[in-house]
Image (cartoon, rainbow, N blue to C red; front, side):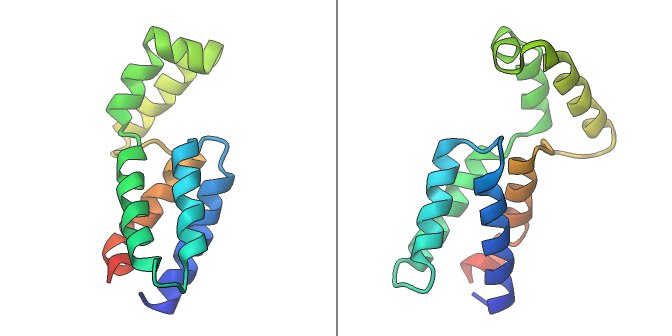
Length: 118
């Protein structure tokens, strides 16, 4: 992996870990990846991180459906409707994924997936 790509990934992985919207499994995968940098485990942990992030990136259709559900009301509380409306606006603007801090970091990382795996 090129040094500039690695620096970019480290920055985005740290952003991901600090995001209020990041799930624990992604935080754990991010930390394992950071711990494995410049070790023999780096490539394996890079693959594991990418696999985790591909599962975690929230498509807008999924977010809209969830925010409008009973489960979404429990998670988002009175802001569930605002979350769904925001996601609908993003979709109308041609976006594919949630723009919360965690998803934004994940999307940036996955955009360089091929470079990270090289």
